[in-house]
Length: 195
Image (cartoon, rainbow, N blue to C red; front, side, top):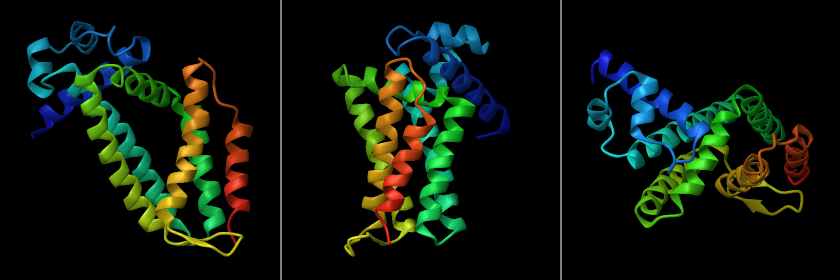
């Protein structure tokens, strides 16, 4: 794909990000995205055959960016407690810098689960997410819990990301910003759980 096509695709995704932030998936239209992006609707359909494909790509890009950053964090230190703290700090910073990311992910994810055609697409996306998360978990390595039990890095990271995600999405779905101290408390719980 040449640079002009990549730029056009990015322009469309950025416009979709703004539209899905303001409207639900089902309220948003391709006309809205075309108008905001300045890209003609047939061109949008060239890159994204449907609104579901466009929203899926947007979610996938967000998830990919999050797990790339988590993998980089894991690679910077072998100290598990430091990794936990850095991952929690990353989530806090992401929320402070761009809470729009989580709002869009929550909104699209929820809307996708309402209808069969989009539910299939979100399940495919969850599979991709799971693979990215497993890769990061494998990089994390085995974790020795404070009880002495050994668990895979995949299970540990999955549990931590799920706990952080629950607090974030529960608050975002209620129109509230998650409290920093709640996210830090989750980090403390996971730090206390390891040797």
